[in-house]
Image (spheres, rainbow, N blue to C red):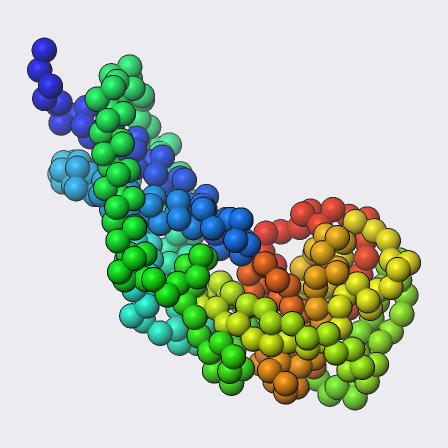
Length: 336
């Protein structure tokens, strides 16, 4: 019995392995992008390993690509576009890890990484439908499993090397530290089409609605001086640990607040929904590092949410509404 595999068999197994690795990489990448608690750190690790798995599988995939390019299939340009999207995702992921490209404006390595990944989703689905791969009994042999373990081992080693020698300063989310302890050095970023509004603190009013109906002026809010040190971990690829002062959301709502969730709304229309049980650890901050919030950082008031990514830290807060709606019944991200 020969242990040599035919090019067709090797190509089929490589295609199946790439499909699995890319699908899992997209799932773990999306989860890593949205979640920011230490309990989900394993997702970031797995996402990085899967990225290196795709990179390692590029070597046995190259002959398959070369053969495919010689066949004038009508959908080959879609396959080329998929290859470009995957390559762009890998390259920008490595650039973010190495921290060799500083973000400018709304563009950052991790932002472009996400754009490439989103572009790859429909292309991967189209490629899978138009070029289906059938799993055969030989694909589940002991040899195949040993090959898979070998690829996973190499990928794990490469990821470990990056963590130890190249990217040791990263947080568990993959973000790099910027300006901790110095609010003036902390980047100012906006979400999608948000534009920093100019709000006069003397005219600002916080509307409490739902089971609690009350308006709170800035002068009233400023009397709350709960101070805490928390880390803002932005989906733009950086984190910054700062000292925040403000009011506990639970204290603002009072003991009579009821409901399953809280909706925090910005003056720009942006909003996020949270479990009611999180109200005690959420801070409505009016001060950053001992100074009033700047316009770019959410003045006059912004939300501080320990354990969540920056997209949950709503700026320019104008309303808190209690609701019986489950907190998870919302879009993963807000599109306004």
